[in-house]
Image (cartoon, rainbow, N blue to C red; front, side, top):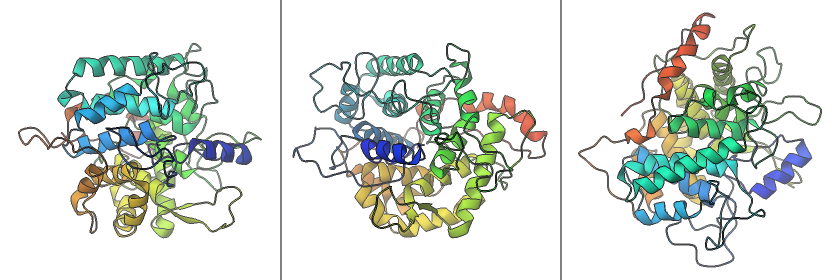
Length: 416
């Protein structure tokens, strides 16, 4: 769901070749080096922001707030300046002096994560009223481009996919909006859309997983990236989720009447089994690549850790977290701010100190990629209550169905 983004154009091409088997917010791949020289003041990172400027800025904000830091006002202003008049965000606008027009490629993923990030920094921002307006406009735009099936595609009007729908659900949860009340003109909710991507426990190759989208023949193919994103969304959580308790191993179980809560727990079961094989997820080669060897997928492994912890399967996530501590340094350095943010959020979800992540201080490394943030307020809690919406509380209402099949899963309150 919520991950270091590859170039959107490359992924769009891959989706065409594979029948939409690739997800737009995916595992880390380095952005191209900027050809224009100087990057905008306030922007995090040094790579070309064309495909991920808003995304990496927003993830950096969420990770900083989770560790008590407040982004510099300059950085917040940069993100606010990227918003179009209708409330949407593009992946990146190089010239914000020109208003968005019909040619501006509005991005549901960037809009959703920016809405969540702005909400998270509001309490200590210089102009909270401005942020309130931006958040309201962003969520309002997302409602206007919701598909008939209740979900969202990467771009407005595009076919719904599990990742984009999950990113929006996470943003709605973070700003205190019940996704179940966010209905399309046909009365469909985001959860209705998510259930269409869920594979049954009887599926031979992907029991309990989620697909990104159906392939050209309508078949659902297991996708670990989509599964991690949809697991969080089904639990009513976003990328800043913390671990649930009590801790217990996930299990896959099909209900006669599927629910999104049960599908989320099934997704956690799939991720636990996938991670158990090697301690990490694998990244298949891109279409047309000369090297067809699968590589360790650091970014999606981090996302899977968050999803498992949020589902109450922290024990199953621990080997993957240990693997990340030993093997993520080079990837994070190349990936930049969003990569550091992913690792910080994985550490936070498992109550691991991101300042002692293996041999790395992830907080220091992230903060160094942009303008110096404001130091943590020692008189306040280490994580802003702006990051928590109380959304998990009403999600428990639907947990009775899960208990009925013998899982007995409970959701803990988020840490303050």
